[in-house]
Length: 19
Picture 1 (cartoon, helix red, strand yellow):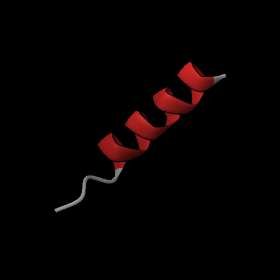
Picture 2 (cartoon, one colour):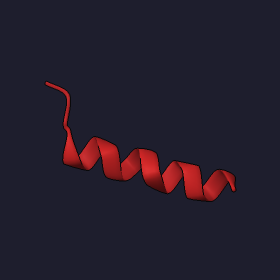
Picture 3 (cartoon, rainbow, N blue to C red):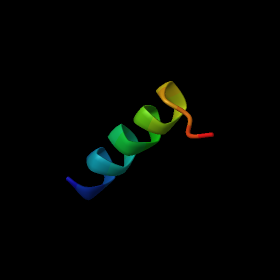
């Protein structure tokens, strides 16, 4: 489960990069 959560977070960061 943890790996799945990490992947989701990474995708969110790529989709919505913080400036």
